[in-house]
Image 1 (spheres, helix red, strand yellow):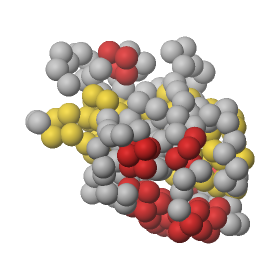
Image 2 (cartoon, rainbow, N blue to C red):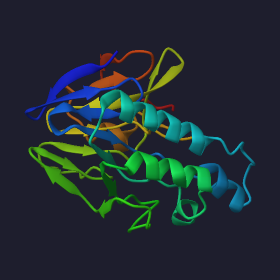
Image 3 (cartoon, one colour):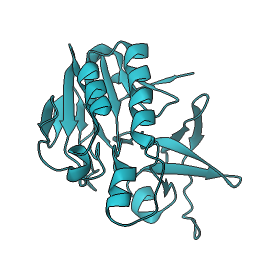
Length: 222
C-alpha cells in the first residue's frame, strides 16, 4: 500500500518498491538502480554473483511504470554500477530499456558511478528542476526547499531487522536504492542523519509503507 504525503507543496506517492510517483507530473522517480553490478564485481576480480540483478531490477521497474502509467521516468543517478557496466548490458536488457523508454520522457540524472551521457536513450542531466522540486543525485548540506536525491541507500534498523526507507523532512527527501543488489547505509549514520531536522520521518518499504520517526540519537554500531 502506498503512502501519499505532501512534500513542499506537492502530493507524492511513496511506493512499497522504493519508487516515488508524482501524480501531477505523471512522473515515476527511482534511484540507484546500479544495473550491471554483478558484471562489474566479476570484472574487477571480486566474488562471482549470479548475473540476475539487472533482470530483477528492470522487471521491478517495468512493473512500477505500468502500475503508475508514468509518462516520465526520472532515474536519480547511479543507474549503472559504472560506465563500463552501462556498455556491457546484454541484448535482452538493452531491448527492455528501449521498450520502457518508448513513448515516454526519460531523464537520467548523473551519479558518481555514471557521470555523463551513456548513449542509451533519454536525456542526461546533472540536475532537474520542476515546479517546487529539485532532483539531484547527492543531497547538498545546505539545500533549497524541495530537494529530492538518492546516493545514500538509506536503511532503517529496527529490532535487528533492516528495511530500505525514504527519509523526509520539511526541506528534503532521500530515496532508497531501487537496485536488487544494492547495500544500505544505517539511517543513524552521522553523515546521513546530519542532513535532516529532528522532526524527520522515515518511510520503511516492504509489503506496505510504514512511517516512523527518524531517530535523533546517533547509533554507535551499524
